[in-house]
Length: 364
Ligand code: GLU
Image 1 (cartoon, protein in one colour):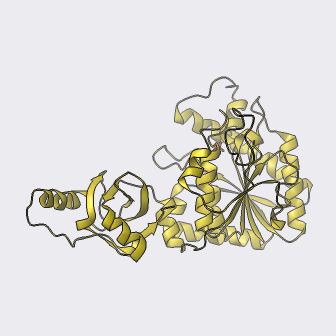
Image 2: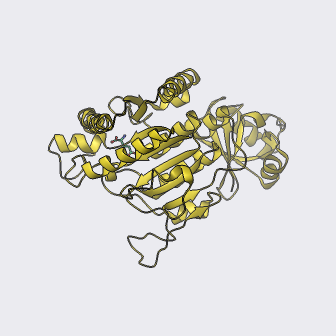
Image 3: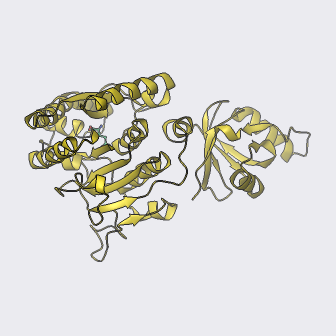
């Protein structure tokens, strides 16, 4: 089985911004078990920034400026990879470092190249140790969220299971840090908006994730045909029991019934959105129930300075996201049509705002 496992900064590092050796050892033990059982595993690890800040003696409040954080990540990435590669080698495993950037998911050629390299590593029994290339990615293009990277990687390598290891046992009915009666949700069939709101806010100060990014990552994974397990990094069997889909170790999130082709996954989850197109109820139904393209006649508003071929969200009158896709015409032209129609002037109501082949339905 192909698996992708992601572990967050709050688990990989200690309060003193040092490597959390017991946790890393336990994950390496489990990786070794999986490897000897013939499974192929890629590891996505955070912790570069946290470890770098530790090495630089910046133990207080996390600096706000990005360049300092980038410099810290360059320092910490070395420690991070040394810890993982060293401990894996002690268990007879060969690993290699892959640093990914947003453009590796956004540009088709790079996407295919990353896929080929990762695939070859897995074929050769090498454990890829993956992080974002934090040191050089500026804020504009930084993905900044390893949960999402892990989900995108799980699609990239055709994983069956994505394991997100964190400092909680899984997803709870309420924030367990605040509500004593919160209980663990063991199974989720579909990631809905209500579920995302259950997940509460940000995690710890060391990590950037929290449950929301995990839920969103699980959604990407689901659309990629991958099941997700959210479990505690401190649980010594969470990862190794993933191939048997053992219940009780965390929250399992099912894959969705239909699997999006990789081009649609790329449009839906890798491309940043440059704006939105708001549509009326008729257009919403036509898109959702009949698989129609979006025509200018159904557009009731728009936002952002998007051009043709940019990715935009399609939202309903109440602001909920219905779909995402590539606009066929830019905001200026579409806005012009809208204004003319509103003013009762002749407008091209059948102008194609978004073609169905470039659109991914995201409702529900
Ligand atoms: N890439 C960042 C790091 O290694 C972490 C990003 C995240 O927390 O998701 O420090």
